[in-house]
Length: 398
Image 1 (tube, rainbow, N blue to C red):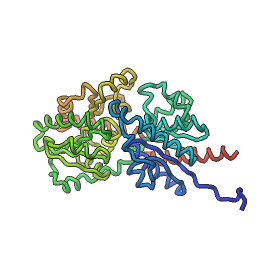
Image 2: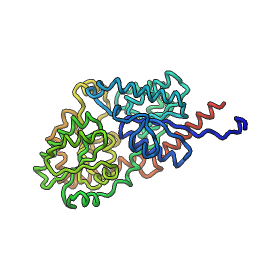
Image 3: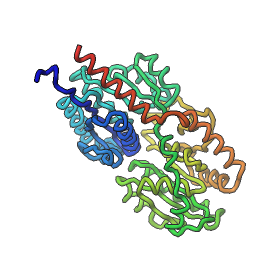
Image 4: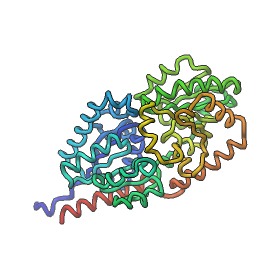
């Protein structure tokens, strides 16, 4: 049989994430790709969600899911080693596209190494860094080592394309989790939480440094809140690589406390909770989908914040607030992130029905602008990615 008559080699895609939120997006993207092209071969780096879709990760996420100077600096040698390992694997196996998911401090280094060594390898950024909010000059640099951006936010294509970087808006995949925000009644029953007990979901972050900085603040906030909310109960969903640290840090919690550790139970906890106290991040968008009134708190290490603050241009830290252009979710950042302020904002959401209703109305508007009600974002991302990979093969064959 001649080479011309040989069946076409299946598309191969390498997907790389650096932390649990990216792993969730990667798992959803892989599932969508399978529905459009079941023959696609996957490789790369991921966590539990991507493993569930068949990925055998080159290495675990523990070494790369870090943030903040105090935590990153000691791990720089390991992170750089992982960058080389991932890039060298791509150079050796030559996938049709390398998809770098979120975690720009890690994944963008891989893209830069690939383009420096072999510019022919095609790179895709899924979940671009919010450079429109901070250090916008990075968009011009990104155009040198990415061939395509799959954008989650409707205003991003115009921004990135002004720097010469091809961009397709696919919508925010987190909206696909709306159907999973259920099971609250059953979870309360299973954990022995009374149906009418005031329940607060506490989300101190998925990175070690976030847990270290935020969990003590959240604990004190809960202690203050409990004085005004009799019978208060808390629930904390944990992710594997920080679960032990969270459990240790929550020892002696001031009110009854429950932990859950699966995605299904996490979403059920959102459904069960009356109010949430959360670190800024993807989880706040999930809480918006679950229609859980939320207060956001966040702190960085003082040196990290001092270096970053002059470069930040966005008026808010929380995506829901950025999209709406107003503070729908009360957010308390850095020096404003105090137990007194967090507890007061939480108390309002427990007691003031008008405040709850107002926030829920805002959350609904925000998730609609992220693509809710249209084609699933992961399917749109899968279709764009497959078209891009096939286009690359066609060009290579010419």
